[in-house]
Length: 433
Ligand code: CMC
Image 1 (spheres, rainbow, N blue to C red):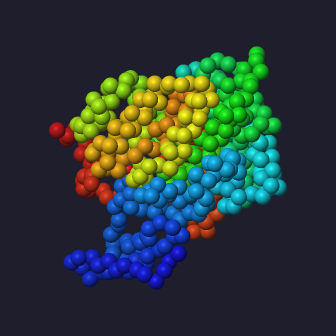
Image 2 (image 1 turned 120 degrees about the horizontal axis):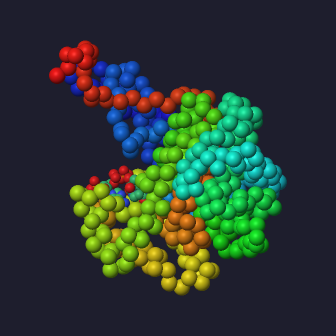
Image 3 (image 1 turned 60 degrees about the vertical axis):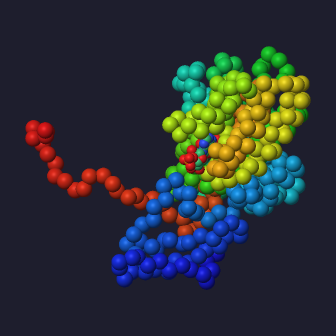
């Protein structure tokens, strides 16, 4: 990775200089290795938001934000979305290669045999208010898994890591579906291991004991697709949170709970929920121009939710795929005219031609259409981000596992520029003005 090229940095006004090696990945821009800059020059680097900083090396996911390319282990997202299935993608992300038929079967059995929750975990749900946000329940219950599965908490043992990975991937759909059941006051539906991963989730979410639940294959396919599209996305905020928590040696259940907390924010996974709220607030196509004026007014904090991305300065490839899936699902459900979809498409059309958005290279991201498709599939808005968390768990676990297997792994510990008060002496309360 480290080639012969380097850059020499000289600190003005001193005789200190250092040579920083240039590192190259398989794809993507080269990177300066700044690790010895403090030793050699006595200065740090400053990069709040990490826009110019690689926090790790990784073999899992690659994004070319200018070209709108997303690869999982080298495979284009478009090909995986078209030809693969979610559990195969899970295997790929975790292990680096696509499985052969025997490996796929064994992996599926491995995951699906862990779908049930410890029966005592059921009682956790009673501790939440019925109107708790599903993400609050997810943070709590996923974190609580560490109190139940003591036999897979040794982060330095490969077998423990393997079982924890299975447990997390298998149990998050059950946890999310039960968060919904608890909110609406319906009985919890137990997992069915004869169904596919996506079907099992739909079943646990929608079925009730009083009726037979008829699986719609188009919706099951759409669910599987949505899961594939959200499975991993390089070093985003929640993944970096998982890695940072994991770098301390914390157990994987606690690390994934931290990732769920980080995903919740509207700038990240919470955007899908925020998009629907925004569309409802706009209400009608005729209000789009006024809404966009509000967004462009820098005195407002309003954003066009579902637009813009730290890395993509082009169309998010996931948004293209999900937009098409959205039409397929609406067709299947016989929804001819969906006012929200019409509104979203009009908003997209106007924004893509507006100088403000063009100049800033703001394009629709995956969340722009995911809310519309999830709503059509019968998911309440409050569940959207929880669904994102279900799909992203495999990415978090894969990134955590990769980090734990790296012999050079150290605790993550950023530095700061201190801009507070200089050293001063304590003043007793009686002498303060
Ligand atoms: N609406 C209006 N203006 C925007 C938007 C937006 N959605 N996104 C960025 N901008 C403006 C921003 O105000 C700034 O303008 P200026 O240069 O005049 O100050 C410029 O574009 C650059 O934006 P930035 O804030 O430096 O970009 P960032 O990389 O820090 O933020 C983002 C990325 C995703 C947080 C941001 O685009 C955003 O808040 N988008 C809306 C929320 C959203 O859809 N999030 C989902 C992201 S994709 C799913 C996921 O991976 O979680």
